[in-house]
Image 1: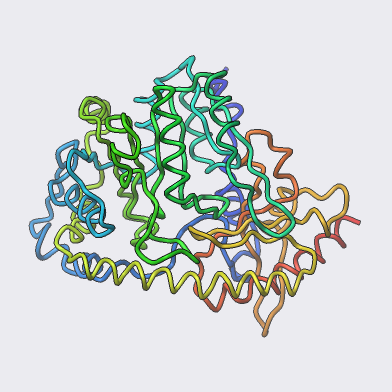
Image 2: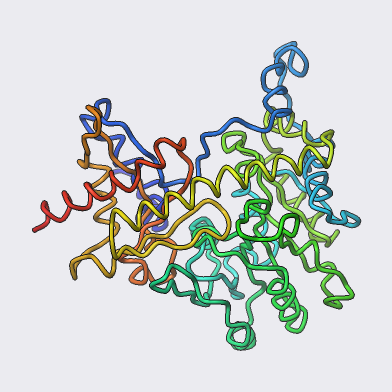
Amino acid sequence: MKPKLSKHFQTRKPSSIRQAQIIFSKRLDRKDVEVINLAIGNISLPMYPAMKKRLNTLSNLHFKEGIVKYTPTVGTDEARAAFLNILLSENIKIDGIECLITDGGSAAMEIMLLGVCGPSSKKPILLLDPTYTNYTEFCNRLSIPFITTKRKLNDKGSFNSLDLKKIEKLIKKEKPAGIIVIPYDNPSGQYLNQDTLIEISKICVNNNIWIISDEAYRSLYFNQVEGECSSIWRISERQVPGISKRRISIESASKVWNACGLRIGALLTDNKGFHESATSEYTANLSANSIGQVIFGALANESIIDLQLWYKKQRKYYSDIMFKVRSNLLNDLPGLIVSKPEAAIYFILDFKKICKENFNAEVFTQFCAEKGKVLIEEKKYTLLLAPMNGFYKNSKHGKTQLRLAVVEPSEKMFMTSKVLKKLYIDFNLSSS
């Protein structure tokens, strides 16, 4: 006799963004195959220079005696000041904004859901479908129901604009506790402009619910006017009376700052009561990563001009790669639908116009990770990808779609279309 796993564990599967990596790790020939890992937003770029400098001098200046203590639960003064300095560099007023440092944006998401809905909640949270997998994963973990409003990718690679009337109608019917938006969207790459955020905020005020904005990619937008990033923190009481004290944002060191492994995030809010209760909840975690906070804290002392130059450099880096990668994909796989890069670092690929009737993107992802290999210049390659079924409430909607993250060095990114084409041909041959 052995103790049984909980029902939750018995049905638990890896997140869509980790499935391929786990499968590949079990390959017998994994040492002979070069991986182009596009399944997860694990950026392979150096951190912001001041953060990199902190890392290189860490033991001498900050942990000389080898002592690494907990920080206050709310986070160090410097790490919190760093997140607020980032807002200042985006020309955002920081008066009244409270900051809780968390272990990555993911921990901030979970604390937010506990504060907005509560565990085993009867009130749902409203998400935009498709949505980032961690939100649905945490909802399932905490037994919080979620509802969605659908977005559809058209054949030209654009997502339809949000139907705000439909969203308000859904809110009135289902009475969610709040709505989560990602203005620089993961996974769709759709950009929600400031006017759209203002209109959504009006709906939230009219229906007395929270507005939660995931702003991890705030500075990564393309084809927009420089210096005009969208944010809930740009919305004034004059524009939306009553917006104050109902705003929450999820922040992260991972994306704009190239520091995924630091696991530093933040929960920002202009509601002091929410902030104090969130900090009380987080005392069970004791504190976020002490070393990560010291490294990220370097941003507290950076000038606004230097930070703005960094944003510009990041946008140029990604836009140069993303537009070329999209062009390569369209040329090498005619008929493939590829989302247009508006923001963030992701593409959605839809095979529906070129695939066989029974094509399943999750099965294709498993094939690439388990046995796929393509020979290019005497090297074998495969792709790790994320099936989109894990990003939709109804997994059938993403059956022919994959998410591709622009996170590998440029030379690997520019190989992607050729490797994908050959893997797709091999997959079709193996399943015929």
